[in-house]
Image: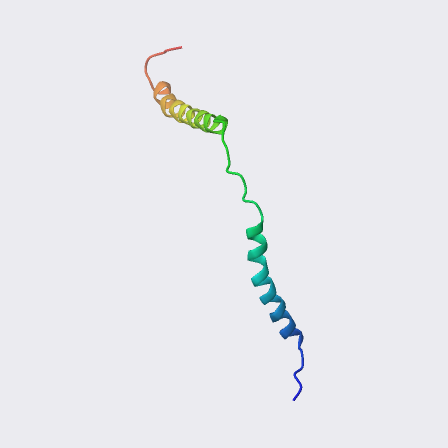
Amino acid sequence: MASRTTPFGLAVAAALVFAIAMPALAAAQAPAPAPTSDGTSIDQGIAYLLMIVALVLTYLIHPLDASSPYKLF
């Protein structure tokens, strides 16, 4: 009995070849360099955090000033 090659069989064979060959190709590449930081992104994050804190404090204190019986300005 002669075996017949089906498109499904070819797809399975191609998938097996790729599954074996792809990890070997990926291991041959040089690893990516480690990310470096010069501190500017950290400084910018701290600045944004401080601006948000200042904005929240401003909106928390403003109603107290508006309802105060004293005219400050």
